[in-house]
Length: 209
Image 1 (spheres, rainbow, N blue to C red):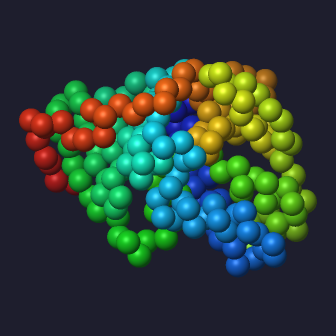
Image 2 (spheres, rainbow, N blue to C red; image 1 turned 120 degrees about the vertical axis):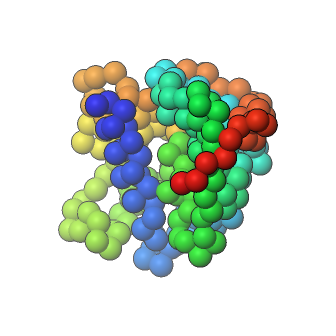
């Protein structure tokens, strides 16, 4: 049940980030720059790295996230994203499948990377941005704090008991209830990628979707 709630939270974040602020906000230079970088494939501020989480999830990436792979929990399945190609790899069955993401599809990176920490989005909301069709008529304000997680000083944004924290655009913390342990929290970060995760292993069988 907890894993389902984590994925639901990721889906909400993807939905929020797919709403364009650039056309709705005056003086949105920082957010505009951020959006352009994300849409060009530059997800993170680190060139390469690997982050492990307390629930067994793992994220590894290079070229600022233009190529990345992640696993949720201790699943035998991981997702490899390389430009507009996405591979689902099952290491227990030694099979994989590949599907393309159309270049015209909006918010490709927003939707496909659940470990993207969207600090400029939260800052824009705190600066009074109103997004059409979302939070209409409400005065939304995230509480912003600092917290050291996995040895990194992270920005943490909280709203109605849920907190998101991150460092260099990488999600380090997801806490769905302030009275409970985090659903997701980074426990280690390395400056190198797991290169063997960023390719489909030889000998694996390709299957159809």
